Amino acid sequence: MRAAALYGTIVCMALSVVSAPATPAMGLDRTTPASAGAAEARGTQLAAARAAATGIAFGPCPEEEMLPDSLRCGTVAVPLDYAAPYGRQIELVVSRAPATGDADEHQGSFVYNPGGPGASSITFPLVGELPEWKKIARAYDMVGYAPRGVTPSAPLSCQDPAEFAKAPAALPVHPSTTYKQRRIEQAKAYADGCARDAGPALRHYTSLNNARDLDVLRAALGERKLTFMGASYGTYFGAVYATLFPSHVRRMVFDSAVDPAPGQIWYRSGLDQSLAFESRWEDFRTWVAKHDSVYHLGTDAGAVQRSYDTVRTAVARRPAGGKVGPAQLHSALLGAVYYDDYWAMRATALSEYARGNPIPLTDQASPWAAAARDNENANAVYTAVQCNDAAWPTDWRVWDRDHTAVAGIAPFETWANAWMNLPCAYWPAPRQEPVDVGTEWGELPPVLILAAERDAATPYEGALELQRRLRGAALVTERDAGSHGIGGSSNACVNRHLETYLLTGKTPVRRAECAPHREPNPVSLERRAGQEMPVPVV
Image (cartoon, rainbow, N blue to C red; front, top):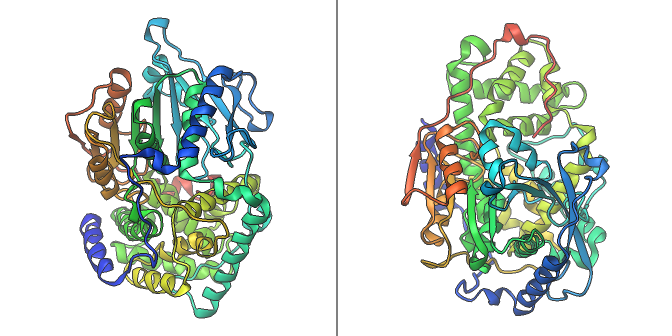
């Protein structure tokens, strides 16, 4: 069954067996953004005015970031709590590469966020050196930053990084009652660790505050209106920004859009994502089967699944390189579900392992010790924002019922998603209601949404919902493709729409379509055999 058809089938099946959260979040009145908090709205105005007066003193970047001299860094102060703008401040680290074009080409600052929550864009300005971005970099100062809580912007931690990266680890597809109880205890301990590290500040890591921080950054950059591109989660708080500050928007790009409907944030979103991951996992296995003469893992998707299951069983019994167990194997293959750039490498690793050579799998899937602190930090921020943003079910029986139902038809990622989000069931900080994202006709200038039709991390329905809510938004769809984050990547048609919009402000009338980018080429096992492929797990 093709993935698009499979996705439609399993969504229909899941809707019949999976309930919504026990306490669904209610949306705010999007026609009155001040309802997000009148005190916070006043605090944002004050902080933005203060940032505009102060600006950003750009100089050398933090030494630990190991960035080239072409990139300059500075900081902007934002209130921890916008209801108390004179209270504790957080310094966000900002990076910038000046526009490379002539003065008459300059269009101001272009700010980028790659999502997460928990991801940094400090290295983003370096993309201006790539062919796909050079024209945009001529017109704009390329700006990246580390959001609140993300290293090095007052980093949040919930657990010892060494413990977080511990390997190998088990990850049963159909967990036992005993295993589930162990993960419940771990989730409770993790939530407690977040509270110990952050204290009363924990409640302030939210999408609303990320949007407010973005407005302060706009002011600090000296921009009256914001030009912004957000990918993945960056589309969600970008949409929150557009709802709260529509008159401050110049141009906005939403790449791989999160479904912003309040009922989706965030419990339901995770269930839908697990369904979509199953479809994309089938895409990968179908591609591997098509190249069975190279990989020898099976001539159809089912046979490739059995080969994968054999490897999974083997590393559970004896971890590859002493480090790669089922959880590490799954994490590596999840990278292939996000990005088809990984398909050839991951297929080679599985194939070589099956032939008795564990080195490619060990190199690709082993925890990267040098990244342990950053990975733990990213997970801490992800957890804090997701848990704070909305109400989650607090009864384990709801989680167990819903995830058991979805795992019955979409086993690849469902329980892994559950364990990642389970601390939210035991979260010690107060939750808030999601913003009811949306703008009316004429409130926003033209904005651009980019989406791949079979993206699993942010299913395509999210792009359609965002377009409905941001009246007048244009949508560019990469048909029959599923990589996550498509702007400035390998599809020339998508890149033309992105470039045209950022340089001229022009969008398609409503919707445009692009043919898919080319499928990956398989890598010859004969050329790869025995070679190391040092790719960090994603």
